[in-house]
Structure formats: C-alpha cells, structure tokens
Image 1 (spheres, rainbow, N blue to C red):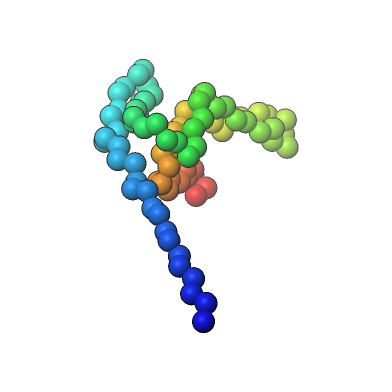
Image 2: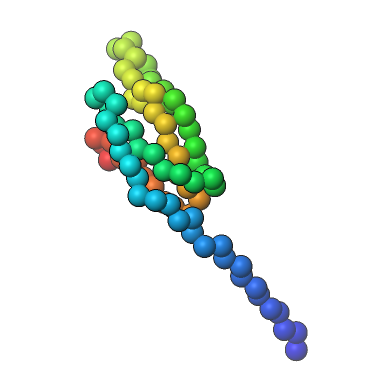
Length: 79
C-alpha cells in the first residue's frame, strides 16, 4: 500500500490598521499600510466612446491597493 502525505503551509492574513480617510477638496483619500499587494493601480483613468461619439469618463485618476488575502468588489450604478 502506498501512502501519500499532503502538507499544507498557510501564511496568516496580512494584518492592516483601519483605513483612515482625509478630505482632499471634494474627494476622500483612504490610506492603508501594507507591503504585499495582490493588486495595485495608481492614477488610473478610463473612458469609452459611446455610439453617439461622446467619451464620458468612467474612472478619473483612481488609485487602489488591495492587500494579498483580501477580497474586494467595485460596484457601480449598474451593479
């Protein structure tokens, strides 16, 4: 009989301090301190051209950092 050993090593989730928000004009900026990000983007802008020729902004100068081990969702008006 053959025996197989399975060893699973899990690293603990990154512990972060609570987010701190600061008003910067009419926008709010949140800051979190972590070194291991799964996703990070800075100053992201995105727009699409409509069938009528307009180019409305969808994202305008957005920055986002998602630490490893966390699940986040970004929802808009259409869900």
